[in-house]
Image 1 (cartoon, rainbow, N blue to C red):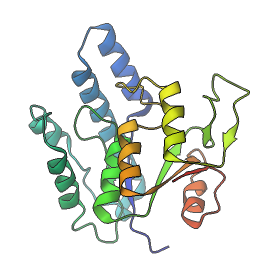
Image 2: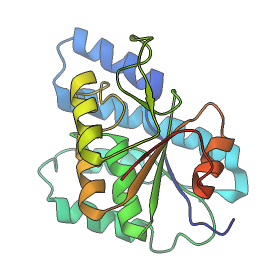
Image 3: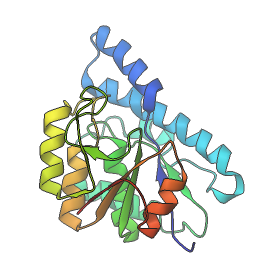
Length: 212
C-alpha cells in the first residue's frame, strides 16, 4: 500500500512467565524488564522468519546491544531518540522489526519512538481485545468499547487498570502515551487476532478505537 512499516514486538506470555518467576525470586524491576526485553526479541525473530524477504533481517535493538547498554539505564532521552533515528535511516522498502530496548519502559514506548523517528502519522496497537473499553473487558463483562477518546481519557483508563510495572503495562505504557500526545500522533487500538484489522486501521475502516 506504499506505507513505511515498523513492527515492534512485545514479550507477551513468555515475558510474563519469566517476569513472574523473577518476582518470586526477589529480582529487582530492572532485571525483570531485561527478561521481558529478551523475550520481545525472540518474538521479533519469529516475526522476521514469518515475513521472510519482506523484513529487514536484524532485530533492532539486538540482544547484544541490550547487554552492552545494561549499565546505561540513566541514558538521556535525547540519546534514546537519536539511536532510533539512526536505526531507521536506511530502512528502505522492507519492514523493520524491533523489540524492547532499555529497562524502565515497554515496547509501546519503543514503538512511539520509532514512529517519531520516521515522522509516522499513525501507531497501530494490535492487542488481544477489540479496542479500548471503559474497564478491562476480561474482568468486567459489562465494560463498554469506546470508538474514540482523547489522550487524557486514555490515561485515566490506563491508571485505573494497570500497575505500570514489568509485565503489567496494561493496555498501553503511560510513558508511550504521553510521548504520543506530545508529538501529536494518533494511536489506533485494534484486535490483533485478526491481522486484517491492521490494514483496515491504515485505511480508517477498522473496528477498534482511535485516540488523538
